[in-house]
Image (cartoon, rainbow, N blue to C red):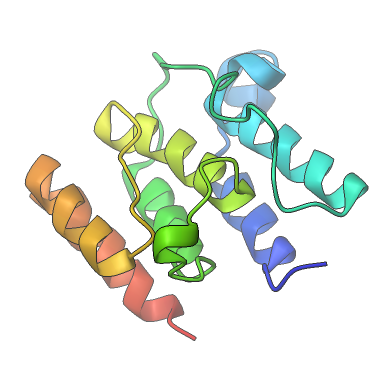
Length: 144
């Protein structure tokens, strides 16, 4: 399969989830975290790294209040899962889909990822410097 740390991704997503006690009930694919979890399960079951039309079906907003640090930590972790694929970046990559869901939570919309973590961090810094600094701190903590 791939070199993704699936256990780590599951752990970071779980830390972001507000759980049923926080939401009342699980909205599954209508929730950004729930959608990400479903994509992850699908990839594990099918032994794939890509979700066809994964970005297209992603919920585009959330009125929930998530823990900013947990979300930044998850993004930082995911950036270490990226392969800096540059020209070969695929929007339907599992890591891209989950990171995009978390960006909607943290920044209000998914950010363009051009296959380079360095370029990505510069772009996020232009959107929200505080969030970018948190993401970078966690990225450094998880650096392989």
